[in-house]
Image (tube, rainbow, N blue to C red; front, side):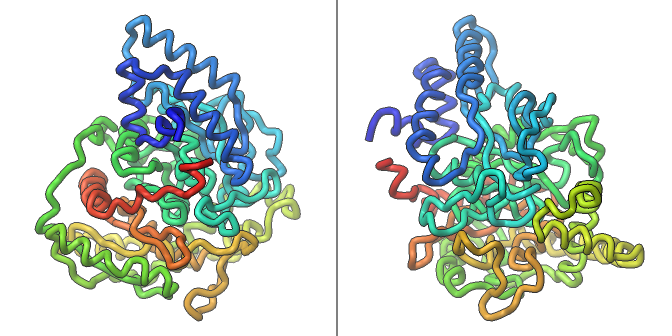
Length: 474
C-alpha cells in the first residue's frame, strides 16, 4: 500500500489532525484524494461533478492561511464532495434531473457555507436519485452509482454517491439529507455511518418548507467520531430556520467514549415489518454485543399505530410543495415515481391532513413515554440487503408485496415520523459479503448520547473497519 493510500484510509479526525499539525498540507491531502478518485470512481460513479482546479485554488489558499498563522477551522484541509441536491455557487447542481442538467447556482446552501467556513475543500458533487426520490441512486443525467462491495448491486440512496465515496476513501467525510432514510439506507448498504439528527439540529436554507420536521440534513463518515466532527460544524441555530435548535454545534466536539453499562435498550428485529432473512441473520448477534457492553436489552418497540399513513401524507405534501410546479410544466419529464407521489398529494383531502396531524401528535406522546423507559431503540436500518442495480425499487420483502416505491424503506421512514435522532452503524454482512447496518434511535433531541452509544457499539464490533477489497488494492 502506498503512502498516499495510507493517508486517505485514515479517519477524517486523523487527517484533520495531520493538517493542523503541518505534517500534511491541504494541497497534499487534496492530491491524495484526487488520485483515489481517478483510480476508483470510473467503475462506481459516486462523484459525478469534479472541480479539481477550483479545489486546488481553495487548498492553496488554505495552506497560505495556515502558514501565515491564521486560525483554522475543524475541517481545515479536508476534501468534500457535496450531495448533488445541495446548492454550490459556481458548481453544477443537477438534482439528478435532466431539467437541471446545466444548472449552476449563484449561492451556496447553508450546510455548504458552514463546511467551507470550517475549512473544508469542495471538490465536486456526489450522485443522487432524481430530486432525491427513492433509495436507489440512479438518474438520467449521470446513470447509476454502484455498490463497492458488489458493483452489480445498488448502493442505496438517496445519499448513495456520498456513501460510496466514503466507503472507497475518495472523501473523508460527506454530507447528505434524509426524509425516509436517505442518510441511513446508503450507509447500511455501504458499511459506513450515517446520521439523521433531531429535527432542527441542522438548519436548512434556502428551503420552501422551513417548518418541516420530515426532512433533515446530516453527516456521514466512516466512523462515529468522524460523524460527530462533521455534526459539530453543521449543527447550530440560524435565524433563517424557524425550527433550528439553540444548542451550538460545538457541543458535539467532545470525546465520545462512555460507559454504556446499565443503559436500557429496546431491541426490535423487525419493528413489526417484513424483513429479509439475510438481514435478520446478519444482525442476530446485535443483542449479544449490547449485553456484553452491560446494556439491559429487552425485546420491545414503540406503538407506531398510523405511522405509515402519517409518513405518506406528509411526504406527498412535501413533494407537491417542492415539485408540484415542475409537474405542471414538465410532468412527462419527471420519473414515474415522482409523478405518482405528486398525484398522490393532489388526491389527498384536507381531512386526510387533519387526521395525519392528530395521529402525529398522539405518536409524539407515545414516543416520549417510550423513551422514559428506554435509552435507545435498536433495529435494522433496512429491511433488505443491497439489491440488484437494475431493480428500481423493491416490490417484495420476505414474501410480502410492497404497494409503493417507499414501502420497502419503512424501517427508516417509520423512525423518521418518530422525530428522534437516528444513526446507521455497520453491524454485519450477509453470506454473500454484503453490508448490513443496525439503526440506533435516541430520545428526542438526544443526539449526543446517541453518538456516544453508537461509538461504544462500533468499538466493540469494528465491523466498519472492513473496507471493500478494491479499496486496499485499487
